Length: 284
Ligand SMILES: C[S@@+](CC[C@H](N)C(=O)[O-])C[C@H]1O[C@@H](n2cnc3c(N)ncnc32)[C@H](O)[C@@H]1O
Image: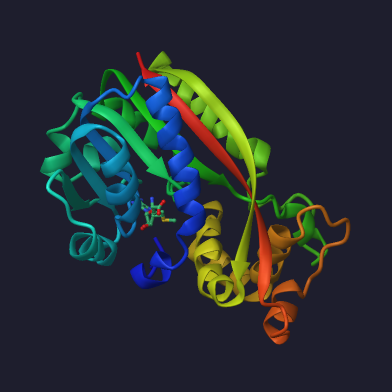
């Protein structure tokens, strides 16, 4: 997991808040403002959404908010503490038997709601994540997530002379298939919502510069090894990923998109186009 600085993330959040708030409204409508005994927030980041949105708008007894980065959890404890919220450092990308936190393991079978906003795209093995959620949720418990479907940049990279069959990145269809198959395996979940949402997020120049390394880090999961990732990162990935974000329908890729943006201070705002997947599934 690449490091995301809590201060940098805290300045980026308005887009994430909007999408999380839509989710909270739809969960309340779906479950008639039900009160949840135990909520788990996966990839809680700085804890702002945990406290201000989940904590204030979803009736609950207790929220366990989890992040892999110790600095995020320290920041969350310092800035977003609350009586009903407990923060925990845990890597959720490992398989259930390797989850080391006794606190989390003791919740097995007792979680009513697993919520995750813009975090599951960092975790490569979707089947493993779904399996872990199956372990944690009670029967009838709900899993609700918003996650980014990463841009398919294979086609754009072809212009750099990559051998055509070398597909290091997953297409969007493949990413969606992974989720569909993971959710349907073992018939553990009944999928109630599997919705693709296209968003356009205007982003200030400095925020874009600060956030770009985080976007790049999400591509790491598609590489076989760190050497491949590092060499691609230096050669082409920044230009290609930025171009795909700001210019998604272009016929001709711009192989210098990021460098041109950096060199032109008159570009003060860019529109980032993302495709999100919203999932609601019920443990059977
Ligand atoms: C974009 S932030 C989203 C934070 C928050 N949910 C929000 O919407 O504002 C993604 C978070 O997922 C966390 N994350 C990434 N991989 C993780 C993992 N394997 N286990 C737990 N958290 C992880 C990151 O550290 C980061 O804080």
